[in-house]
Length: 172
Image (cartoon, rainbow, N blue to C red):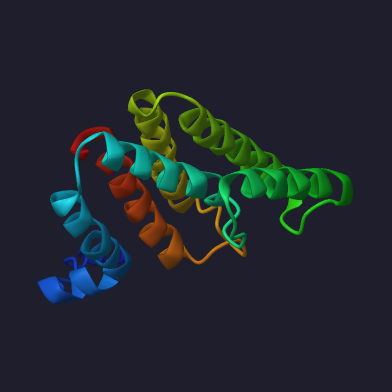
């Protein structure tokens, strides 16, 4: 006598509002960034101001707890990387190398964006912000966030970063 195999259960249907609630970090990020994209300024002054503002913040992104200006952030990033290399980090050498590579790439994009003509700089800074959003989503997808940053924050930050990256490249 063979046992009957039970039929697979039908997927549970959730009301649409529950799906939106599960994606609250994405919704919040869009609410905070889209209005500025729609009403953002234009002209040479707006481009230069945006490049400076976004470029100064870009080195901070992979080092979430540091707050300062662009050159100070770069120096702090280098100090953190040197200390991490010498003393070790709580998340291990593989995670440290990944974070260090990200910090290096985002610092280079930010500083290059600040050093060149604002018309070119806006694209470098925009690329940095956009790819930091991709960085966040890759961390989410690969489950590399345990003990580093909350998943909800990484999702929120990823959406913000992508939206901020779009603004100087296409809307100014």
